Amino acid sequence: MSLSRRQVTLAALAAVPLRPGGRKGRTLYIAGDSTAAQKYVPEAPETGWGMALPFFLRREVKVANHAVNGRSSKSFVDEGRLDAILAAIRPGDLLLVQFAHNDEKTADPTRYTEPWTTYQDYLRMYIDGARSRGARPLLATPVERRRFDVDGNALPTHGDYPAAMRALAQEERVALLDIEALSLALWQRLGVEETKVYFNWTDTEQDNTHFNPPGAIAVARLVARELPRTRVLAPRDVVRLHEDIPTSWITWPEATDASTL
Image (cartoon, rainbow, N blue to C red):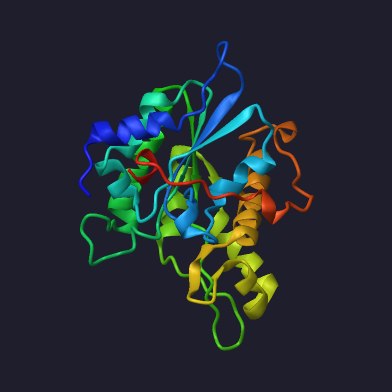
């Protein structure tokens, strides 16, 4: 399906939280891929971590999840999705950027970026765009897949992309949420068998990239913990960090025409 930039912008604006009676609080926008994205009824129990992030934030901090399945830092821009966010974002808002899973696809020129050149170039577009509108950009290294060696060691799968993002964050003085390192440590602690509980393993598939509700909640908790640590949010803005979140809180809405854009 070929989408115009206007279609993408209209769909994205429809998902932006309203600010009744003037500006109250702030909005955290997510630009990312399927690991963070909103999922719908046909995709259940697959769950993006962005679906669980609001459980860890005060109501005054809204989440506008613009992450979309299959996108890279490049294709997200080329489809007009960054433009849609920048049309809605306001001074004081936050733009959290997580890409790499699809940037790695060397056989697909519409998505592939090279870690130390084009990947960083595209990430700068998000940084510069947010700053030009008085918003604060955040870079989040890509959450790790579930992969272990024969000795049970959790293995990194993203090549140079996390290192390239870390270097860019330092160069641009952008807050970095090192979710790649934190998730890898979490999978190592959980081990080969227990991690299956966190990924989208069902009777019909064994998915080691995407999460189910427990996995999405666990990764969202990692993200939420980093927000006050990096002084992006105040400690009072983050809640339930040490509480169990019921998986029943995760819901999958019916897909609409706008949600499929």
